[in-house]
Length: 436
Image 1: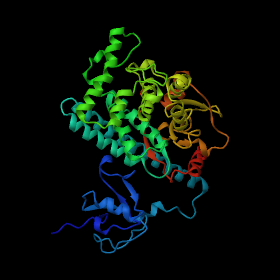
Image 2 (image 1 turned 45 degrees about the horizontal axis):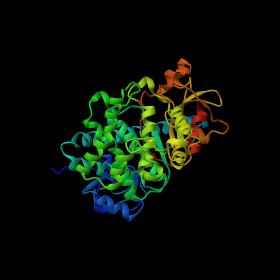
Image 3 (image 1 turned 30 degrees about the vertical axis):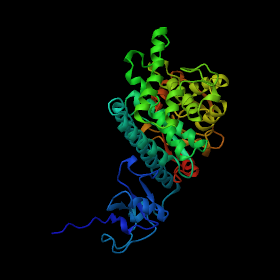
Image 4 (image 1 turned 120 degrees about the vertical axis):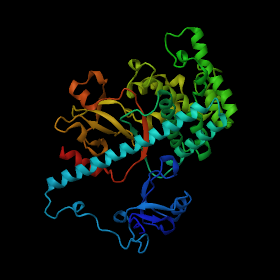
């Protein structure tokens, strides 16, 4: 007996504009910002068909169209009764339901970012491990990962920089991916074209590739290093350039490897170049690399909060870094980057967990609210709260114990990004916060 066709599956040849589809593929296996979306035009249909799939999953209830006869789907199924608000629902019950729905969307968004970061971190680790023995293959893998990031970033609308709740991957891959994500978001801010974004992505992914050939004890620069140990550590740049040549990297990517420790005033290494002799991509990676090393040093006890790291970079900015790039970095990350612990103007304590790259002064925060269990806490968009803002940054250890335990600041700061969701409107967030 022939098995019945699944009603939520449809042939790719039957796709049409208005259908809400789900691509059950890995994050890097398709070029769309999200794996589930409503088809907006014929170009998206053509792209889906080019993926080599015969069928994909779709949601009739979320679609604008019905497809009679396709996989035995005769009509759009009505939304479950439970999703339809009763006509007699009280304002309080409505607010509670909207709060639960908002919390569900926020959890799904964070889980999606963490899955994507983990997938990218694994790809980064594998290509790094293969670099010495299979340099050409490693280059191909780095280019594929950079292309996937470019596809996700070069979309219409704003992006949100998300703080991840758990670190995925080893220290080396986390550092490389952190630097790559933030550097490429900077490239997007400056309007780099796809080719330059690709070079920036490959170069930032591989900027520390030369450390593979260094002894473990000198891979991470420390204050107590002797002059000999410092020289050995600094050799990773030259070793990386040599390995990059074996890999067949483009000129743009190779120059990132060669110049990512140079400074605007010529005080960097190994060639003591100044700004005029550095590429734009290398100037970006030099700054972002320093930021991540301040937030995520080899010894966690030496870690700065993202706000402290940004303040130090600003203090050194006139000499160490390109002022235009530093200004754009602060504007994109916000004065209080994701991961910063802060006190609000209403005296509550909070942790910044998301920043809109085009409107960073009012970030998204997780607020210590004693009446709400930690697992039920909503992320609040400060842009939607009139009269409430950030008063000051505060070191985690200076917060009250209850706030510290509730907010649970990360020992290592990892970032990823996602398109800003229209469903997470300021009105909805304000309404949800009002409930609490």
